[in-house]
Image 1 (cartoon, rainbow, N blue to C red):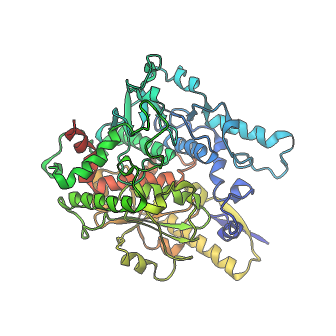
Image 2: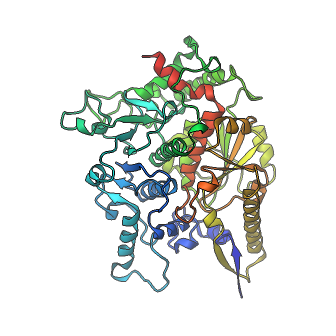
Image 3: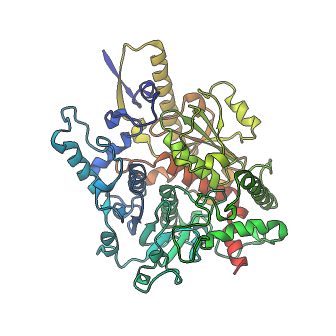
Length: 541
């Protein structure tokens, strides 16, 4: 006898399958919680474009993980066309692309004679473009201005200090090397032949961490989020390029010099070993230039002082009960989807998060952390997250309001899955918990005034987060356990539900959605700190 459960592929099966390895299973996409979103790729590019005048080109993203996350993020925000991978010739250049992850499920298809490979190439070609020439000379967009997302250049301007252009070709740089100098257009490094490619606008995402940059797709996601905000919800955010009111004005003294120096470096070229070099940085580690050539202990101490200065700036305009904390934490279940935790830690390091708490597996997959686990060490709460979890968070100073981050995975949560009715008691209990989590999600998602959107006005989000927030982040395609969800007082979405086209996109990657949420929340919760990216730059010019 078989029975169907609306909502989940059995999570107990997934946990057992992944017990010995963090790598994705070779099973079909609908049986793999990390791959089920890929079934949306068969629909091709969404016909509804939230950003019909924005085209995206990526100089890096050769790995399957970043490449497919880039595709998925552009689908979610509805860019004018699929992202273009400027340095790749075609799908065959994407490294480690899973041979079955992006092919339709077919039990009779055994992959003989390259069937899987051909299907994969066809599907990927419908949701991605390849080659710099195609991106630069597309008749639909070649008249549009070039936009570059890059920090550490004299031409960069904070995303918080300007409106995102209505139209343009957005260039996202290589994960390690950044945007090619011909697009940045700094005259001391660009030849006359290359100068015609210079971007009209160079934008950057203000950060406050020890690391030098975010994950490349997370950065792109934040940029597209601001493009969406300025296209559809321009009244929801204050642009900080205008003179600040008295409540947001700054008087810098010697104690604040470090804050000013830290921020100003985002608008300076990185120090190089030799003049004109674009590969030999003074310090090869992915850390902020203020910490170049410092040892680990000194970086920790100096950055602690910087955070103390930031807290002083925010406390002078004062808001929350505990001025010693920024009031933003993350709670994550590290079980099936371990890859996302690395990206979450990078964003937490950058955006004034007090702590990242996690339960499930103790081991952190360091692939995506690029060393941030040393500067923003996650706090382990045990294997199950049961018992005194709330008390543990309170002892660490975490705020009491919990918000569940909805990454747009409802189509996965609600798909029909089957399981064998003759399972043992433990299995049935797990299924029961899955159904309970799904019931909480569907019930509260439809409740009036329970859901907030990151596109809501600054003052709405600021008021809702006044007591601080613990952001509960789901795993890829899997809801948190019911005892976690029952603590949540809000559901937080990236865009309002009425703007979502669930059947046309694949939701956001968990790490990308978390990065967008942490950036937006830290900016609205700490307006005085957010204004630093404008105040510091203008005070130094």
